Amino acid sequence: MKGSATKCRSPDMLPEGPRSIRFGVFELDQQELELRKDGILLKLPPQPFRVLALLADREGQVVTRDEIQKLLWHDATYVDFERGINHCVSQIRAVLEDHAETPRYIKTLPRRGYRFIAPISAEQPSPKLAPGAAHSRATRLSLAITICFLAVLAVGLSVFKRASVARQRAGAVPLAVLPFENLGDDPKQAYFANAMTDALITQLGRLSELRVTSNQSSMHYAGTTSPPVEIARALNVTRIVRGSVIQSNGRVRISAQLLDASSGDFLWTDSYEGDMQNLLTLQSEVANAIASNIKGVVTLPANRRTPVPQAINPQTLEAYLRGRYYWNKRTPGGLKKSIEYFQDAIERDPTFAQAYAGMADSYNLLAYSGALPPKYAYEQATDAAMKAVRLDDTLADAHTSLADIHSVYDWNWPAAEKEYRRAIELNASYAIAHQWYASYLIAIGRSEEGIEQARKALELDPLSLMINSNLGWSYYLVRRYDDALHQFQATLELDTNFGPAHLNLGRVYEQKGNVAEAISEMKKGISLSGESPGGLAALGHAYAIFGMRSKALETIDRLMALSTDGYVAPYDIAVVYAGLGNDELALAWLQKAYENRCGELMYIKVDPRLDQLRSDNRFRVLQHKMGL
Image 1 (cartoon, rainbow, N blue to C red):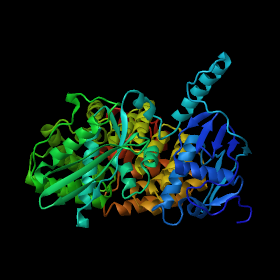
Image 2 (image 1 turned 60 degrees about the vertical axis):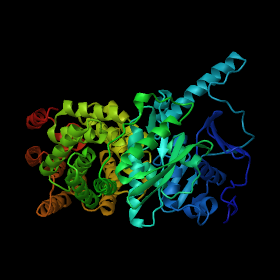
Image 3 (image 1 turned 180 degrees about the horizontal axis):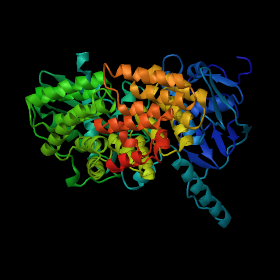
Image 4 (image 1 turned 180 degrees about the vertical axis):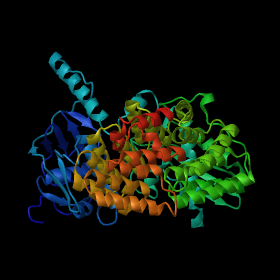
């Protein structure tokens, strides 16, 4: 290509150029594969490093996504290039503290590629300064301390690592369980391997000595051939568990391995075999073996071993595992299918607490998504969650479901906080508990605590699109619109087709007064996610405040038409009327939302779209009745 400084060669090779280049306060050592800031070594995985080196080598030039694929991933070495390049650029921006909207280093060219826009200079690499390194001269010592302090602050701003520093100092070992491989002949048994992975993550997460990456992020590496060191850097962990399962003729065999992420060396490996009815016991044995073999980092007291469960009927367990498999799909169809399997498990064994917890989780998500009316869905969820807790008070997911019901449906804020705290006490690695607790805290006005919980959820589940988007949503609700903008853009770099992030990005543009961008992003979100009432309401509100009255009224008509075939939250209609400045109708529909126990109403205190109503006494009375 004309003007190109690179040639097509091995994917492992870096661009041919100077050994070290400098841009701003950063230095890229292409021989040592290191990135430093003022001499301080920064953590950047190999693949993002190669992308950064390629872009810097082509300073000022457009580097297409196809070029990046051919030069760095080659034709068949990476199974999901689109997600890979998005994730790489996101990691680079996090380390450089760069933003897609206001870039200083890397500019995104939609549908084309990227351009490195910072001026660079070639030179020999500067001496490496390890954080805290002492120098003989007092001035050098002072400089080193200052640099170390700034480096810690820079790393602290990274979305993916922000909370992990504090927790690692507290002694929690960061660990990821990669998807177990299904060795059975029947492809339909794939659910079983996924269920084993999920169960092991849950059991290990109960140990406060460990910080376990969530299932949603780990599942990104199903069938991967990526080296453990790259996976570990992407997930910010130091230990990796991987393994396989095979189920046949009522027997199950679990093989597991514990690896040191920095070297890829095996720390422990073993196999466990038994009857299906003893599967839960086998899972506990594997979890305890993993925890006790993390030598030199944590000593696990006897009372911190995961509890050994009782034997269970194989048909009951299989129904439950299938239910969790469909629940993890997080779609209305998958959630309804999961309820069928959880119900089957309960009918086979009415004392199986985990099946009730799964049932509660499913009804909660169906209610939250608007797929079922709140009254019906939350009453079913409450009944199931209460039964789960009565049967087994140690289930973090059951307490999380109860907390969600207390906040979203009951508006019993003290009870909700008690349950969230209990869930996190039982399993500090349960990302959903932190995610939902964040929403609760922000809804009641404890903004900083809420943001911190949203960050903790992201630390535990860094590749989850929903949890990435949830941090942006949290920023949006506390009026930190620039932070929200950057977070939604970072989410879309993971997956440009994630509809909720486009929709919420539109909400942010609306608050910033960017008409074209707001409507464009909202329409894109609706197109990608489907015509949901919440999405239509967001678009209708934007039409209204930007003076497109007729379009806003058409949106209300569309919402009313949808309500004849399914559930439409009165809150959504109220939002559009608020945008139109029709306070009477907005308040009337908010009253209906109160009577319907709409889940969205929990945000009445912080939703910026309702700000014009806050001086009305009827609005204040409604807030007061909700305990806000």
